Structure formats: C-alpha cells, structure tokens
Image: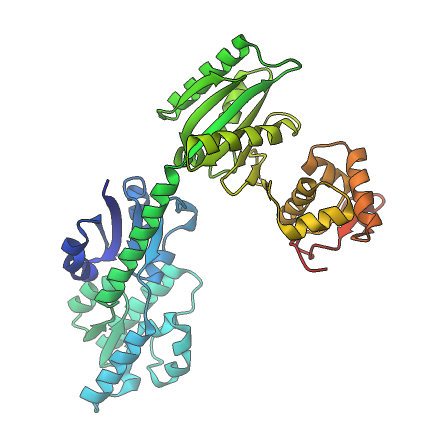
Length: 437
C-alpha cells in the first residue's frame, strides 16, 4: 500500500511540492494541508493524523506551533529545516547587486530564529516591537506587524521573511519582500528520509507477536476457565476492532497478533488494556506474557518466557519480551521496568561479585532510574522485585557486604517522625543511572 504523507505548508511552498509530486508518486501520495495562520496548525494536524502515515512540515517554527500533547508518536513528523546559509547567501547577493542598499533599513524576521545570526543583528534595523514574548504565536504575529508597520512608516526599504504565510499580507500592503525557502534538494531529501522511516515502521509493525494468558489459581486452569478466558479475549478484540484470533493451546489461551496491534493494546508497552479488561470481568488474577519475533515460533518462545516473568510477580500483571530478550513490565503504570534476560556483561559480572541474581539486579537498577535516585528503601526493593521486605533486606545486606552500598537516614516529602533508612547504591549516580564505580 502506498505511503500517505500529510504536507503542512503555506501556499507559497506548494510549487516546490508540486514540482516533485510526480517523481514521488510511485513511493507516496501527498495530501496538501495548507495554512494561512500558525494558529491553524494543531487543528490541521489533529484532523489528519489518523489518515496519513506521516507529516512533512515546512519549518521549525511551524512545527513548534503544534500543541505537543497532541502529537502521536506512531506517526512520524519530519521538518524542512530553516537553513541559515540561505539567508547569508541572499544577503551577499543583495550586497553585490544593490550596493546602495542600506542594510540597517532591512527587517529580517529570520534573524530572530537563528541563534548564530545574533551577532549580525546590530547591523539591521532596531525599529519595531521587540520579539521577546515567550508565546510562539505572539512572537510570529509581532514579526508580521513589524514588517507592515515599518514599511508603511517608511523606516525600511526591504523585508526578508522565512514565513510563507506572511506573503499574502505583505503583498496586500505593498511591502517589498524576499521569501527565504528551503532548496528543492532539501525538500526531496526530507521526503526521502520520512519515506524510509515509515517503511521501516510498517515492517516492524507487521512482526509476529504472541500472548500467553492464564488465570492464576491454586490449580492449573481448567478447560472451563480457559474457555471463559478465550471468550473474554475475543470480546476484547471485538471492542478494539481487531481481527486477531485466540485459541486454547498447552494450558494457555494464546493470542496471535502483530507488533503494531500489540503497541495499540498496551499503549506503547506502558499499560496493558487487555489485562485491565480481563481484571474487570474475572474474579481470578490474570497473568499475560507477550513475546515478539521475526516469525510466530520465536514470538511463542518469548511469550512463554514473559509468562514466567508474570508468574513470579504478585497479582495480575503483563510482561513483554522482544527478539533481543529485552523484558518490559509489569505493564500497569508509567513506571514500567526494563531489563534483559541475556543481560549486560558488566551487570552480570557485578551481580556475580555481589552474589545476587542478575535479573534482580537489573530490576533494582531499572527501578532506581525510574525514580531518579540511587537511594532506595527496603520497601522500594521489595516492591520492584515483588517479594517481602525480609527478602529485600537479604539482597540489600549482600550488596552492603560487598561494599557497593552505604546506608543513609533521610526524611522525605516533609514527613514527620524519625528519618527513614535508605540504601545508597554506589554503582549508580545520583539520578539512578549506571555509573563506573
């Protein structure tokens, strides 16, 4: 299926895209989304985000005008970058072709968005309202007002702009202007880059994913329990408009899907909505192991491994293992731990020196990074390893015996009473990231 690109651009850039539309037609289809004002950009994005594979946006400032909370990280966005060399080239051309032109009587809005140009601003006009508002839209509107007001008050002889949507207003007021635009080569390169990225994403989203599901009871799930679970999974898939299938196999309900659908079901591997649905319809705890692979055999093996991770965790939970044996879970909050079944050689060596399980060490390190601190309590460790506080204390004591931890007593969150005991992990920095000892 041909890639669909949304092109968010002012009308003045349309000739560039039209010039290469025929050349790009075998690879992609353009959907032109023209703007006349920066305030339209977010609405234009939201109206089209579900019907295109990606966006090309003509300019960094135009991209910045989009409300970032609205961005869908599964729909790539590439920006036609503002190239300061184009401004320097244009100024040099003016210097050569119009030697009588007074540089101080030129208004360049481009100068306010190029940090490296600041040293040259002293040679340009200082007239007009200052462009120092923290609000992007106000800054852009001030620039347009300066172009028109300075021209009508005969304080400038030329305007140079990087904003194509200014052009109709500048023409209406008779302003002499030069529009700085990206080169045709830059447009082609940007479109080729996003086509490559979307192609890779599409291939990735078609990878095989299997989920192993079972309800957690004292005895292995009965045929009746598995059948009930399969029916509920089917209802969930129907509610999500997914055509995937579930079947009973080797004591599990197995769901066969794709990586793209998995990311949709788990909110990009952060929160498993399938688990939430089953928890709301079953009295027993539910365990889910997800696995991905280049084919269903590998995905099934990884799903079985992920189910074992879920089994070792308290309560209903959902874990995922990919082809590189990276483990993500439990997928029930934004604080999702990540570790590897294979393990980093340096972490494996550290775990061996301390005398604790490599996976447990990775979980502790992942939790510390999430919490952005290297000081953990025994309750913190018990929670991230899904064990008792006594078990966590045994692990922390081993780390302390190896001199990789020192105890500190702190009060946090303005709590009353005595300071609480924390273990400062010396193989992590203050932000909870791995450091060299």
